[in-house]
Amino acid sequence: MELEFFCEPGTELDWYNFWRKYCFDWLVNDLGVNKEKLRLREHAKEELSHYSNGTTDVEYEFPFGWGELWGIASRTNYDLTQHQNESKVKQEYIDPVQNKRYIPYVVEPSLGVERLLLVLLCDAYDVEKLENDERTVLHFDPKIAPVKVAVLPLVKKGQVKAKAEELYQKLLNRWNVEYDETQSIGKRYRRQDELGTPFCVTVDFDTVGEGESDPAKLGYVTVRERDSMKQELVKIDELEAYLSAKLGC
Image (cartoon, rainbow, N blue to C red; front, side):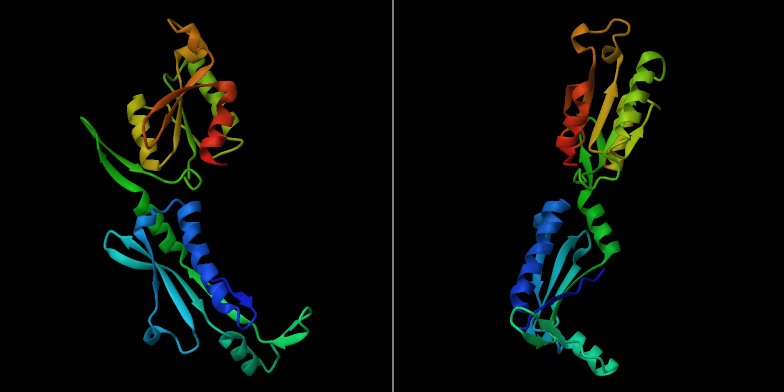
């Protein structure tokens, strides 16, 4: 994906530095990529294209070593000048404030979609050693996790199942949500860890007041957070607001 940013001659290096920082910060702050595995590598003069007065690669430390993720180049006025020479059509911009004409300079951040996906997968993937077990987990930033929430009924029958299905349909109006009622709750947690799902919501007997349940937990669900594996009781009426705050969306 290429973005052509046009600017006034003489300001291109300021905009070049702006885009270097913007791209780096977007990876870290918006996508959650590990900052320690990113670096900016400025091209030496002998590496520069003949038309460039500044080029930087954003590099990521893949399992196989450092590699380019994103190229940011100040291409001067080469692109539009070439268009003008070949098409014989003027590519000048008329600045209405300064009342002058110029061929805009270009700063071009160029990013590979597939390479970015590879970075996100490499950065999120982990195999954690637990006390008596291990788990495979994708630590996606909640904002980019493909599945945001999983709804898990403790049993697949009766009021528990009915309430879980109702909750699933409600949350589905806002997020991509999984519903899973197969196998033990522990195995279902592990499946969601492998998907990178940030939160699992378990509906049990206490939630619906069925059987020998705890009256103090009526109307509550158990929310389990992926990375810490900590569990918290949340009122169903407050669940959507709770998840929205945690997911950032």
